[in-house]
Length: 368
Image (tube, rainbow, N blue to C red; front, side, top):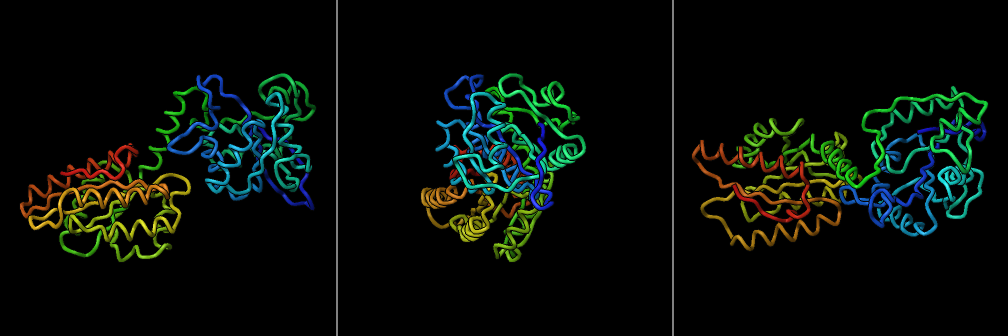
């Protein structure tokens, strides 16, 4: 990662980013350039944009794309609601593409509106989705202190090496975090997806109402899930009634929910939660998981087919908002040991569901 200096307008200390994304992805072994390959249901470049958009002090993000990919990139920006993004057509080499991206700040581009001139421009690979704010801040501060690269437009690969070879300004190499690696081969896509899944499976919220049976199951699930999930929180449904309630939970990076419905045929609690999650747009970055837990009693209402259809229909609706809904049936027993064993098995299944996030199981009902 490198940065190029630019004079701020009216003394304003603005920071922008340029993402070269015009590569063909030949080493991926397929016809789709790697920046557009899906990672957890979303193009890789969208994941990188998400990381940059979380940094509020980056004013603009310029994505440099091949001409044949311009429409695809426009669709990605629109579909996933990316902000502060301007598209620029790339050049015949990486460094000419970067140059085109920098010229966008001088009003010299054709795919978007004019941009204000920043003080610092961060050059970041479109296929490094795990960059964090601390690293970006270090690069920005180094750029202000040391200056950055002038470069050969036709040859060379690393901006820092070119800066040292051709520029009279100082340049500095900063050590990045271990996960700031570049997706190069197809196997890297699987690794990137695994990293994301690991990050978003560390927090879980159990939502239950005040009915005795729900409280019993909620307590047992909470105790067993603590051995599977790093941070488990249990709250009453009365504390999760508004969009703001859900957003407060989500601020803790919670993408996983267990919703306990007392009766096996009842989806009331799960429907309420789904409505709130959709209204709060919690799937804007990563797909959330909801495990709809149902308690089966001897006098259960409705057939198994009816129950599965209800959950499947709700799951289809939820998936439109990037929420994965799974069903889990627990046979409620007055026998303490049986109830405890059922909760233990259910906790293991829940942990597996939020870790794997398997699309093939969406809308399915598992029974313990």
